[in-house]
Image (cartoon, rainbow, N blue to C red; front, side, top):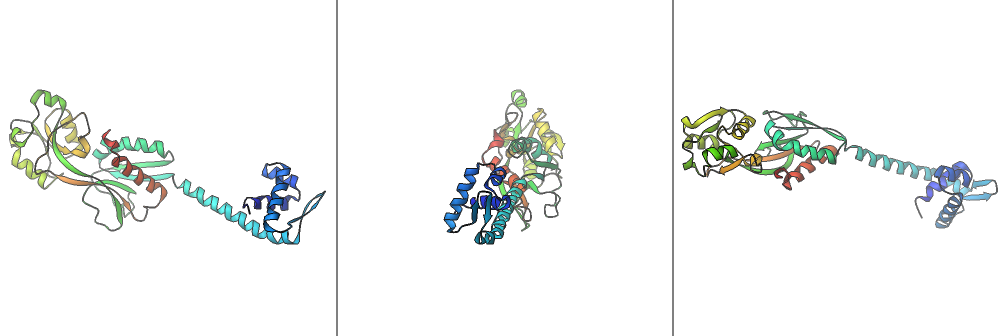
Length: 294
Protein backbone atom coordinates (compact mmCIF):
# COMPACT_ATOMS: atom_id res chain seq x y z
CA UNK A 1 0.00 0.00 0.00
CA UNK A 2 1.14 3.51 -0.81
CA UNK A 3 0.74 5.53 2.38
CA UNK A 4 0.15 8.64 0.31
CA UNK A 5 -3.10 7.09 -0.97
CA UNK A 6 -4.62 7.70 2.49
CA UNK A 7 -4.70 11.42 1.62
CA UNK A 8 -6.75 10.65 -1.47
CA UNK A 9 -9.08 8.40 0.54
CA UNK A 10 -9.73 11.08 3.17
CA UNK A 11 -10.28 13.90 0.70
CA UNK A 12 -12.77 11.85 -1.35
CA UNK A 13 -14.56 10.87 1.87
CA UNK A 14 -14.76 14.53 2.88
CA UNK A 15 -15.71 15.95 -0.52
CA UNK A 16 -17.93 13.11 -1.65
CA UNK A 17 -16.61 13.41 -5.22
CA UNK A 18 -13.32 12.83 -7.01
CA UNK A 19 -13.68 16.30 -8.53
CA UNK A 20 -13.88 17.99 -5.13
CA UNK A 21 -10.91 15.97 -3.86
CA UNK A 22 -8.90 16.82 -6.99
CA UNK A 23 -9.32 20.55 -6.31
CA UNK A 24 -8.09 20.17 -2.73
CA UNK A 25 -5.18 17.96 -3.71
CA UNK A 26 -4.40 19.98 -6.84
CA UNK A 27 -4.26 16.97 -9.12
CA UNK A 28 -6.48 15.77 -11.95
CA UNK A 29 -9.78 14.03 -11.27
CA UNK A 30 -8.53 10.94 -13.09
CA UNK A 31 -5.49 10.79 -10.79
CA UNK A 32 -7.76 10.76 -7.75
CA UNK A 33 -9.90 7.95 -9.20
CA UNK A 34 -6.79 5.95 -10.09
CA UNK A 35 -5.30 6.31 -6.61
CA UNK A 36 -8.57 5.26 -4.93
CA UNK A 37 -8.70 2.19 -7.16
CA UNK A 38 -5.08 1.35 -6.30
CA UNK A 39 -5.80 1.66 -2.57
CA UNK A 40 -8.88 -0.57 -2.81
CA UNK A 41 -6.89 -3.17 -4.71
CA UNK A 42 -4.03 -3.06 -2.18
CA UNK A 43 -6.45 -3.46 0.75
CA UNK A 44 -8.75 -5.93 -0.98
CA UNK A 45 -11.74 -3.78 0.05
CA UNK A 46 -14.32 -1.65 -1.68
CA UNK A 47 -14.04 1.70 0.10
CA UNK A 48 -16.64 3.60 -1.92
CA UNK A 49 -19.78 2.92 -3.88
CA UNK A 50 -19.36 4.81 -7.13
CA UNK A 51 -22.33 6.71 -8.47
CA UNK A 52 -22.67 9.30 -11.20
CA UNK A 53 -23.40 11.86 -8.50
CA UNK A 54 -20.33 10.98 -6.46
CA UNK A 55 -18.52 8.54 -4.16
CA UNK A 56 -20.30 7.18 -1.08
CA UNK A 57 -18.38 5.37 1.65
CA UNK A 58 -19.08 1.69 2.03
CA UNK A 59 -19.45 0.25 5.50
CA UNK A 60 -15.82 -0.92 5.34
CA UNK A 61 -14.70 2.49 4.12
CA UNK A 62 -16.59 4.35 6.85
CA UNK A 63 -14.97 2.12 9.43
CA UNK A 64 -11.50 3.18 8.22
CA UNK A 65 -12.03 6.94 8.21
CA UNK A 66 -11.09 7.43 11.86
CA UNK A 67 -7.93 5.36 11.50
CA UNK A 68 -6.98 7.31 8.37
CA UNK A 69 -7.53 10.59 10.20
CA UNK A 70 -5.30 9.36 13.03
CA UNK A 71 -2.62 8.50 10.48
CA UNK A 72 -3.02 11.98 8.98
CA UNK A 73 -2.59 13.55 12.42
CA UNK A 74 0.50 11.44 13.07
CA UNK A 75 2.07 12.61 9.81
CA UNK A 76 1.25 16.21 10.70
CA UNK A 77 2.85 15.71 14.11
CA UNK A 78 5.93 14.19 12.53
CA UNK A 79 6.24 17.14 10.17
CA UNK A 80 5.80 19.62 13.01
CA UNK A 81 8.47 17.84 15.07
CA UNK A 82 10.89 17.91 12.15
CA UNK A 83 10.15 21.59 11.68
CA UNK A 84 10.78 22.33 15.35
CA UNK A 85 14.18 20.65 15.07
CA UNK A 86 15.00 22.85 12.11
CA UNK A 87 13.84 25.91 14.00
CA UNK A 88 16.23 24.88 16.78
CA UNK A 89 18.96 26.19 14.48
CA UNK A 90 17.82 29.68 15.37
CA UNK A 91 17.82 31.78 18.49
CA UNK A 92 20.58 33.08 20.74
CA UNK A 93 23.80 31.38 21.85
CA UNK A 94 25.98 33.20 24.39
CA UNK A 95 29.67 32.62 23.70
CA UNK A 96 32.31 33.75 26.16
CA UNK A 97 36.09 34.06 25.93
CA UNK A 98 38.80 36.54 26.81
CA UNK A 99 39.13 39.72 24.78
CA UNK A 100 42.34 38.65 23.07
CA UNK A 101 40.94 35.38 21.76
CA UNK A 102 37.85 37.22 20.58
CA UNK A 103 39.79 39.87 18.67
CA UNK A 104 42.51 37.71 17.15
CA UNK A 105 40.67 34.70 15.86
CA UNK A 106 37.06 34.34 16.99
CA UNK A 107 35.72 37.32 15.04
CA UNK A 108 36.80 35.77 11.74
CA UNK A 109 35.44 32.37 12.74
CA UNK A 110 32.11 33.88 13.71
CA UNK A 111 31.89 35.65 10.37
CA UNK A 112 32.06 32.24 8.68
CA UNK A 113 29.60 30.81 11.20
CA UNK A 114 27.11 33.53 10.32
CA UNK A 115 27.22 32.46 6.68
CA UNK A 116 26.49 28.86 7.62
CA UNK A 117 23.83 29.59 10.28
CA UNK A 118 22.22 32.96 9.52
CA UNK A 119 19.35 32.38 11.96
CA UNK A 120 21.52 31.79 15.02
CA UNK A 121 22.41 35.01 16.80
CA UNK A 122 25.63 34.92 18.79
CA UNK A 123 26.23 37.09 21.82
CA UNK A 124 29.99 37.35 22.41
CA UNK A 125 30.85 38.08 26.04
CA UNK A 126 34.51 38.93 26.69
CA UNK A 127 36.39 39.34 29.93
CA UNK A 128 39.19 37.93 32.04
CA UNK A 129 36.75 36.46 34.58
CA UNK A 130 35.58 33.00 33.49
CA UNK A 131 31.80 32.99 33.37
CA UNK A 132 29.84 30.27 35.14
CA UNK A 133 28.63 27.95 32.36
CA UNK A 134 26.83 25.72 34.85
CA UNK A 135 25.10 28.74 36.35
CA UNK A 136 23.80 29.83 32.96
CA UNK A 137 25.96 32.91 32.51
CA UNK A 138 26.96 31.63 29.04
CA UNK A 139 26.28 28.65 26.80
CA UNK A 140 29.69 28.05 25.21
CA UNK A 141 33.21 29.11 26.22
CA UNK A 142 36.66 29.17 24.64
CA UNK A 143 39.18 29.05 27.49
CA UNK A 144 42.87 28.65 28.10
CA UNK A 145 43.65 26.29 30.95
CA UNK A 146 43.53 22.65 32.00
CA UNK A 147 40.77 20.18 31.17
CA UNK A 148 37.53 21.36 32.80
CA UNK A 149 37.32 19.82 36.25
CA UNK A 150 33.55 20.08 36.69
CA UNK A 151 31.87 16.85 35.63
CA UNK A 152 28.93 18.70 34.06
CA UNK A 153 31.20 20.59 31.66
CA UNK A 154 31.95 18.87 28.38
CA UNK A 155 33.91 19.93 25.34
CA UNK A 156 36.86 19.58 23.06
CA UNK A 157 40.52 20.52 23.34
CA UNK A 158 41.35 22.86 20.48
CA UNK A 159 45.10 23.05 21.01
CA UNK A 160 48.03 22.63 23.34
CA UNK A 161 49.30 26.18 23.56
CA UNK A 162 53.00 26.95 23.85
CA UNK A 163 54.38 30.42 24.47
CA UNK A 164 57.34 31.84 22.57
CA UNK A 165 59.28 35.09 22.26
CA UNK A 166 57.93 37.35 19.49
CA UNK A 167 58.86 40.64 17.84
CA UNK A 168 57.49 42.75 14.99
CA UNK A 169 59.04 42.92 11.49
CA UNK A 170 60.03 46.55 12.16
CA UNK A 171 61.76 45.59 15.39
CA UNK A 172 63.58 42.77 13.61
CA UNK A 173 64.82 45.19 10.93
CA UNK A 174 66.10 47.67 13.47
CA UNK A 175 67.37 45.44 16.27
CA UNK A 176 67.70 41.96 14.81
CA UNK A 177 66.03 38.72 15.88
CA UNK A 178 67.25 36.99 19.03
CA UNK A 179 67.31 33.23 18.50
CA UNK A 180 68.07 32.06 22.03
CA UNK A 181 68.06 33.26 25.62
CA UNK A 182 71.73 34.18 25.28
CA UNK A 183 70.80 36.75 22.60
CA UNK A 184 68.36 38.66 24.79
CA UNK A 185 70.87 41.02 26.41
CA UNK A 186 70.22 44.58 25.33
CA UNK A 187 66.86 43.87 23.73
CA UNK A 188 63.82 45.74 25.02
CA UNK A 189 61.29 43.39 26.58
CA UNK A 190 57.61 43.81 27.37
CA UNK A 191 57.06 41.96 30.61
CA UNK A 192 53.98 40.07 31.74
CA UNK A 193 52.43 41.37 34.94
CA UNK A 194 52.43 38.77 37.70
CA UNK A 195 48.70 39.27 38.16
CA UNK A 196 48.16 37.90 34.67
CA UNK A 197 50.44 34.86 34.59
CA UNK A 198 52.39 32.92 37.18
CA UNK A 199 54.53 29.81 37.22
CA UNK A 200 57.15 28.84 34.62
CA UNK A 201 56.55 31.91 32.43
CA UNK A 202 57.35 34.40 35.20
CA UNK A 203 60.21 32.26 36.44
CA UNK A 204 61.76 32.14 32.98
CA UNK A 205 61.57 35.93 32.59
CA UNK A 206 63.01 36.50 36.05
CA UNK A 207 65.95 34.26 35.14
CA UNK A 208 66.70 35.53 31.63
CA UNK A 209 65.45 39.12 31.25
CA UNK A 210 67.38 41.83 33.06
CA UNK A 211 65.35 44.53 34.84
CA UNK A 212 67.02 47.28 32.81
CA UNK A 213 65.83 45.63 29.59
CA UNK A 214 62.15 45.68 30.58
CA UNK A 215 60.61 48.60 28.72
CA UNK A 216 57.03 48.03 29.86
CA UNK A 217 54.95 45.83 32.13
CA UNK A 218 51.46 44.91 30.96
CA UNK A 219 48.54 43.25 32.71
CA UNK A 220 46.52 42.60 29.55
CA UNK A 221 47.21 40.10 26.77
CA UNK A 222 45.81 42.53 24.20
CA UNK A 223 48.13 45.30 25.40
CA UNK A 224 51.15 42.99 25.26
CA UNK A 225 50.30 42.06 21.67
CA UNK A 226 49.83 45.73 20.76
CA UNK A 227 53.20 46.58 22.32
CA UNK A 228 54.97 43.83 20.37
CA UNK A 229 53.26 44.82 17.13
CA UNK A 230 54.22 48.47 17.57
CA UNK A 231 57.91 47.54 17.74
CA UNK A 232 58.27 48.66 21.33
CA UNK A 233 60.06 45.47 22.30
CA UNK A 234 60.09 41.69 22.44
CA UNK A 235 57.38 39.85 24.28
CA UNK A 236 56.27 36.41 25.37
CA UNK A 237 53.03 35.38 23.70
CA UNK A 238 50.85 32.42 22.78
CA UNK A 239 51.75 30.49 19.62
CA UNK A 240 48.05 29.77 19.23
CA UNK A 241 47.45 33.49 18.81
CA UNK A 242 50.48 34.74 16.89
CA UNK A 243 52.32 31.90 15.16
CA UNK A 244 50.20 32.23 12.02
CA UNK A 245 50.11 36.04 11.99
CA UNK A 246 52.39 37.77 9.43
CA UNK A 247 52.53 40.89 11.61
CA UNK A 248 54.69 39.00 14.11
CA UNK A 249 57.96 37.05 13.99
CA UNK A 250 58.59 34.14 16.31
CA UNK A 251 62.12 34.55 17.64
CA UNK A 252 62.43 31.30 19.58
CA UNK A 253 60.63 29.04 22.04
CA UNK A 254 62.32 28.83 25.44
CA UNK A 255 63.23 25.38 26.71
CA UNK A 256 61.14 26.03 29.79
CA UNK A 257 58.07 27.29 27.99
CA UNK A 258 54.67 28.14 29.34
CA UNK A 259 52.14 25.57 28.15
CA UNK A 260 48.40 25.52 28.53
CA UNK A 261 45.43 24.04 26.70
CA UNK A 262 42.72 25.79 24.73
CA UNK A 263 39.29 24.30 25.39
CA UNK A 264 35.91 24.68 23.74
CA UNK A 265 33.35 23.84 26.41
CA UNK A 266 29.65 23.81 27.16
CA UNK A 267 27.39 22.34 29.82
CA UNK A 268 25.87 18.88 29.75
CA UNK A 269 22.47 20.48 30.17
CA UNK A 270 22.58 22.30 26.82
CA UNK A 271 25.04 20.26 24.78
CA UNK A 272 22.26 18.66 22.69
CA UNK A 273 20.31 21.87 22.06
CA UNK A 274 20.56 22.16 18.25
CA UNK A 275 21.84 25.76 18.14
CA UNK A 276 24.45 25.09 20.85
CA UNK A 277 25.50 21.88 19.10
CA UNK A 278 25.87 23.87 15.88
CA UNK A 279 28.25 26.33 17.56
CA UNK A 280 30.29 23.57 19.18
CA UNK A 281 30.57 21.53 15.98
CA UNK A 282 31.40 24.53 13.81
CA UNK A 283 34.12 25.98 16.04
CA UNK A 284 35.62 22.56 16.73
CA UNK A 285 35.82 21.83 13.01
CA UNK A 286 37.03 25.34 12.19
CA UNK A 287 40.09 25.09 14.40
CA UNK A 288 40.75 21.42 13.70
CA UNK A 289 40.98 22.30 10.00
CA UNK A 290 43.45 25.10 10.77
CA UNK A 291 41.25 27.86 9.32
CA UNK A 292 42.33 30.20 12.13
CA UNK A 293 45.87 30.07 10.68
CA UNK A 294 44.80 31.15 7.21
